[in-house]
Length: 143
Image 1 (cartoon, rainbow, N blue to C red):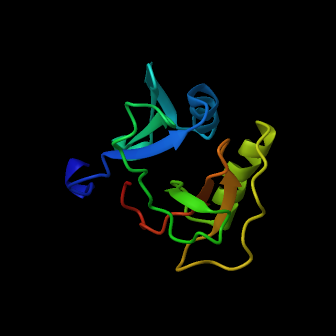
Image 2: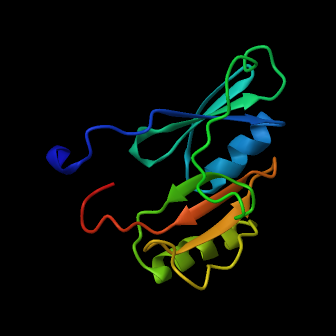
């Protein structure tokens, strides 16, 4: 299986937030793995080992860091982060979305049309950052 995985993954993604604990709980509730907390920082892990670094806004520790930005479409709820689920179909995305609703989240409806082969919906984090969830189109290869 190691041979079929890509050679590299995104290592760290920086977000500055108003309330580290609220943001950590929000992202853990989305299914990300809460790893550790430190003064002014919480680390949450995405599939593939990418660490989402949640730094306290307006803190000396984060003042020299720039926010990361991988969102493609800011008109989608001020998208700052786009995430890809393991599922490939609209039904897979709907199942994931329904699970979030059951946990008390308020995601948008799934978009009527696909975007470059992806089905998607959006949600806002506690700081108002748009987070979009897309289906995978990686075929049968592991992600």
